[in-house]
Length: 472
Ligand SMILES: Cc1cc2nc3c(=O)[nH]c(=O)nc-3n(C[C@H](O)[C@H](O)[C@H](O)COP(=O)(O)OP(=O)(O)OC[C@H]3O[C@@H](n4cnc5c(N)ncnc54)[C@H](O)[C@@H]3O)c2cc1C
Image 1 (spheres, rainbow, N blue to C red):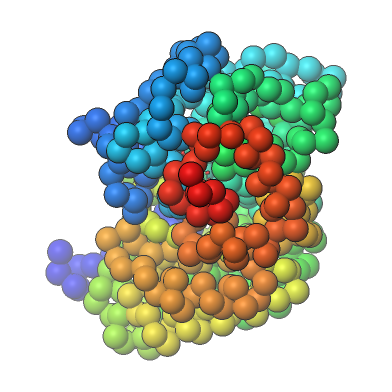
Image 2 (image 1 turned 90 degrees about the vertical axis):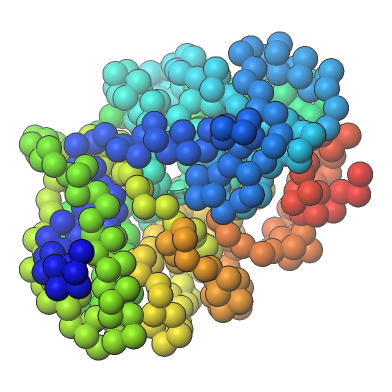
């Protein structure tokens, strides 16, 4: 396509839905495809979604029952690492060439449900996107979701996956009970009835206390949300962010680099009728972000022109107002592969940090075109939750998967660290075991419990060995 043609198509009218890859039809268009991307690769190994990790040649096992899993841990040697849908960037899953990666796909579905307490025991390997409609049939829903819902329940909770909302904690905080098979091959339950004092240790555990088989989640009644998406001048968003977090159930924004503008998204509960949905939204899903890429490709070294074109296009973008089921609106597809670093920051400094990052990138990295994301998560008490010292505002920087991202480590991460941030467990970061230990007051307690439940370190790979200071 000629440059003129590309620029002509920059109406960006679909920007709101397509930057997000948002499918307002409620179908995660990434769906099966995303899982396939993290499924065993043709050579018999495994690779993560963004392919940021080298392919692993470890055997991929799919136990069908708890007995299979116990047998696997008791009768084999080498590392055993559980995997969900492979949507993490940190090397949590690779098990080494002679180890085993364990997929819990057979541990799925709604196992039992207590409608009075609004809790349910769910298969740990179930995908969030499959659980949501099953729960909706029972009149229930997850309180909150992140940007996507193709993760497994165990995978999402194990890294403290979060959405946004001043009063909404991460998914792991909703865990009321869980069952796992320890590294020694023993079945254990952590719940109000069993090992209750250790439940906060097991809520966020990176798959290092055991392989989760079932998780009991606190749910809420099925509900509808009104989603509003609009563009606002970035300085105005910074000035109003705190009020918007206060005023809306869910509030987040995406700053579009080199534009001076942010896309603001709010969700609020409503009883209003659902909005009819367009049928072509999935087709548009890659357009916005690829249009931002086209502008980067052709005008990367002309920031003034880039900003003017973006500004003009955004000025014409219509506001989006949609009403639908919570799970159909909160999560959406991400079709364009990217790499991401996200740090959770004390709210009082987070917006200044975001602005420092924006300034640095706009001065030194014209190659960046993915929007930066800013969200808030309520506090919880899990020992390894990044949110256990209070609510946190998360700032995320993304780069297109084919692009270099070493500057995230050399230039962006030091800004996050100076501000007292803790990294998302599943997203790019370079923290050593000593650095992690300094950030988490209960780290040593967790490490002690880990070595009791996995005395032979079967559930550790080299990355986790370094993190937990394990020598064997
Ligand atoms: C496109 C994209 C969008 C994302 N959006 C968000 C977002 O909005 N918010 C957010 O917070 N994060 C987000 N993430 C990060 C993602 O939610 C986390 O990395 C999450 O852990 C991935 O879940 P998974 O099922 O793919 O788990 P995996 O990446 O496969 O595994 C993650 C961890 O869980 C462990 N695990 C998996 N299954 C089990 C089990 N049965 N028992 C014990 N441990 C287990 C693994 O060993 C590993 O330590 C996103 C990632 C991508 C690629």
